Length: 195
Ligand code: ITT
Image (tube, rainbow, N blue to C red):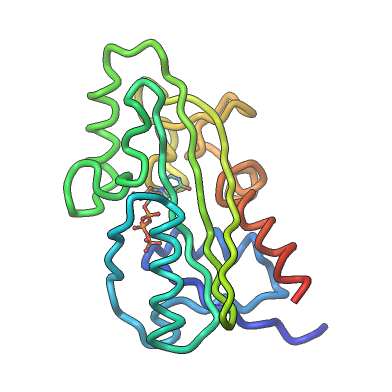
């Protein structure tokens, strides 16, 4: 077997890292921020997923010199005019607390019959002087209560249209096959193969 190719994934979220490593498989050696000695909590100051993904990927390229990609993800809920959206990580405050974020979301959706929502992921890839973006989206609905214990973040309260279970009730492979991140990463892999 050929040696795996190395690439850096700029995330502090271990769940995202595990998903991406599984999706990219043995052909890729996906290095984390800690693998390259970066312990920064890179500020996400943009107002779009694309903008924040670009900030994270460029930070690593500029400070450490590695070709790199980053993922920014949001859960957009129709009845909440697209919230929490780009602010999904900080919906209930600055602590990145998934239980609090989900509780606030369920509370804000308590009297809503329109449960439609989608996850979007934008991956920014910085190679040399170039930047490329890859998007993935999955449509579904917000459940009335949390179901399942696998996955992470908002997974227990999101059911994709393709399934009768929440993301947190699926195996990693089932989620990756239809998820926002799985779809964006498939496009990333196709592009990387051309380099
Ligand atoms: P990095 O920026 O370090 O990559 P993060 O957790 O801050 O990690 P985001 O800025 O993309 O990631 O925040 C997205 C929020 O949405 C965060 O609260 C996640 O828990 C949640 N999230 C991201 N991907 C998800 C997924 O596949 N399923 C459920 N929730 C997810």
